[in-house]
Length: 341
Ligand code: FAD
Image (cartoon, rainbow, N blue to C red; front, side, top):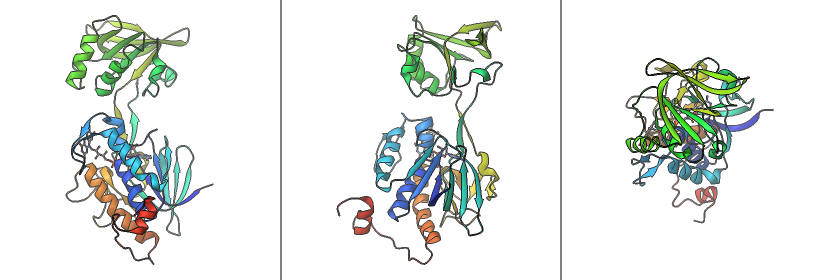
């Protein structure tokens, strides 16, 4: 059974979320699909605690707060989210509509598609060493959803960026012991975080280890820990109950590259009136698109989403006149927003 809808937005980053809002103002309901288990795209996944200073009228807010505010703003429009699934297939039907299918088997029959897919679908860089595959997701993890899970366990944290260091500090005191494994003594995290980690690493609960990860070892078939070549090239075994790998995420354009859209350097070419792609009815907004003068900023994505919404309304209802109305004064907008005028 397909979900029959007007619009499917691929990507729940800031642009996809604001697209819900702009469509909602025009009384167009949307479904939103994202590979990540949460909304917010790069903001939530890559830099949730970092301050953003260039959102109009918000002098400063951290990236997660921006996402939270967007989620609040789009509430009246009841968009349906399909998270943790990647859109894997898109086909145009003879009647001009589109069918989409996700990795979880969700199917859509939609009038329009909005690609708000950023740099592509985020996937964690895997630990590709001997023996790792057998323990993926049972003992080797790429994200932490419940910090309590590590309580009183010996854990390994692999990586040298913000996520690895932030989690090292956050889990210090919860895990019985943490070994932070990084290939060199220099970290790519905020200097204050690195300083704090170094202070704590002199104690009994946290140890730094520099070396190249070479494999995963088991003890009688059960996860045993990780094998690392130390700076002198000697192979060491570091025993642990679980390992958390923070080698970063790689965005992957993935299936979008095969949908016959006009692409240049892995970016989708659009016009700057409708933000429509080379296929009528498929629009692209935010970091995924390109046009002369494009700047990959959240602000640009918001502007593009507003114009795309008007174009989508015209595409879905060519017989209707598209009228610009102010949210300040329009009773229709107030009704859609669920506010008193
Ligand atoms: P994204 O945020 O990339 O979201 C796209 C979403 O689409 C992702 O969640 C992805 O999983 C999903 N997706 C892709 N393909 C599929 C698929 N096939 N199926 C399902 N889901 C899919 N910008 C500013 O304006 N100001 C700043 O101060 C600023 N600071 C930044 C700091 C850092 C460290 C970084 C990395 C970026 C910063 N940016 C900043 C850039 C800003 O984050 C991006 O411009 C913005 O996130 C783009 O939003 P988006 O919604 O277009 O794409």
